[in-house]
Length: 142
Image 1 (cartoon, helix red, strand yellow):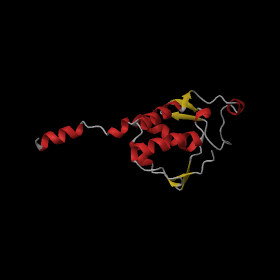
Image 2 (cartoon, helix red, strand yellow):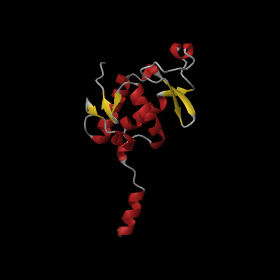
Image 3 (cartoon, one colour):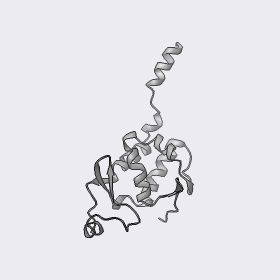
Image 4 (tube, helix red, strand yellow):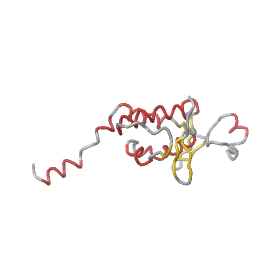
């Protein structure tokens, strides 16, 4: 095979790790983690959507599309469980239990159109905390 043929073939090869079930499941989970429209929980309705006193954000704007976090399925422990499976499947290494989260590695197996949802979910669930620009994994009590 010529060098040109090898280079052309490489352009069309897709990383097979992206089709592994835990990775596909994590992308599906990330898509389903948000509902359409603003949050309608009791607190948001009572405050007319003012989230200024909230520890974690409820309503998000993804490039003009207003969405709300689905609390029933996005607790830190839920996000961690889905992330651990995908991380192990993709990287063949355990997700660190604490310390910095390698966001760039995470983005490698998250579909590009879902990148905008990734950081809001990680922060709003309480799984990570932004400490001086670095994402620190928080201890999760199951």
